[in-house]
Length: 408
Image (cartoon, rainbow, N blue to C red):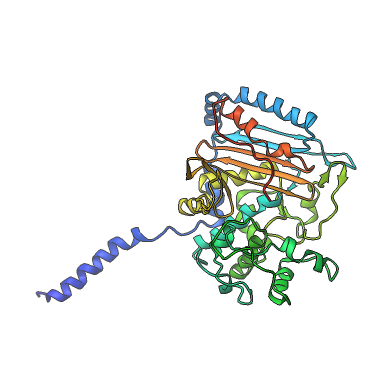
C-alpha cells in the first residue's frame, strides 16, 4: 500500500528524532558512587608515578621545597601543614609546629585547619552541582528560593562572582547585634536582613562591579538547603566529602567528636583566638580540612570527576572587567589572568584568613600543579606562592606576582 506523502514526511521526522535526540542531550550528572570510581580510576599507577617523578625532577624539587619551608618555619614563624603536587605526584608534604601552641600538641599530617574563605570553593561547587543536576539556573533570582529576601534583581551568578552589590553581614549588623541576642546562624542573618528596621544600604547595583562579600556565600548556602531539602553540611558531606574520600574534613559546629579530635586551634602571635562571634555562620567559611584532603579536592576538580567540563569552564571564567588587573573572580574561585589578556586564566586559587588561620589553595590547571598551605598561626608567608612556583617551574622566568594576603 502506498502511503500518502504527509505520512511519509511524519515517519521521516520521527526517524530523524530517534537518531539525533540522544546525541543532543547532556550526559546525566555523576552519582556519588560514579565519582568514587572516577577518582580511583584516574589515579596514577606506581609505574606511571615512577616515570613522571623522573621526568619532572621530583627528587630535586622535594629537597628544594623542604629547604624553603624549613626557612619559613624557622625564620618567618610559619606554623602549619603543606602539601605540593605536580602531575599527580606528591612532591612534598610536611607539618611544622603545634596544633595548639598553648598545650604544645604537635601537628600531624591529618590535622584539620579552618579553611576560612577557601570554604567558598566548596559552596560554589555545590551550587554548580545543583546547576549540573538542572535544579537551578545561574540567572535565577534569590527570591525564587528565598521569597522574603529584601534585595531584588540579584542572580545566582551575581552571588557566585561577588557582583551582587549586597552589604557585608560581617560589618553592617555587628555592633547592633553583638549586644542583643545569641551568636548568629545563617538563618538568623537572613532574618536580620528581612526584618531590618532600616535596611542596610547596598554597595552597588547588582552586576555593576566586583565587591568581595561574605554575604553572597551564606545566601548560597541557604539556597543549597532550600533546593536539596538537606542541611548545607549534609549536602556537602554526601555530594563532595564522602565521594572524594575526604575523611578529615568537616564543618566544626556540626562535626562529631571523632573528627574534632584533629581540629587545630587558631593563634595570632602567641595569643589564642577564642571562638569568634560569627563562627556559627557557614558557606563563606567554616570548613576544616587536612592538606591530604585538600589534595583530593584539587584532584577531583582537575580530573573532572565532580563537575563536567562545561561547568568547570563556567567556574574558571573571569566575570569582572571594570578595572585592569591580573586578579579576577569566576564562580567561587579567584583567578589570576594574563596581564595583557584578562580573559586568559593562568592560575586558579583562593586564600583565606579567619581567627588566626591563614590558608592558601593555588592551582595551575594547565601544568597540573597544586600548592596547599594551611596555617593555624596568622602568617603572611602562607601566601608567598612565587618562591614555591620558582622551584616547581625550575626557575623559569615568570610574571607571577606575590599574593600578600588571603583576600578574605
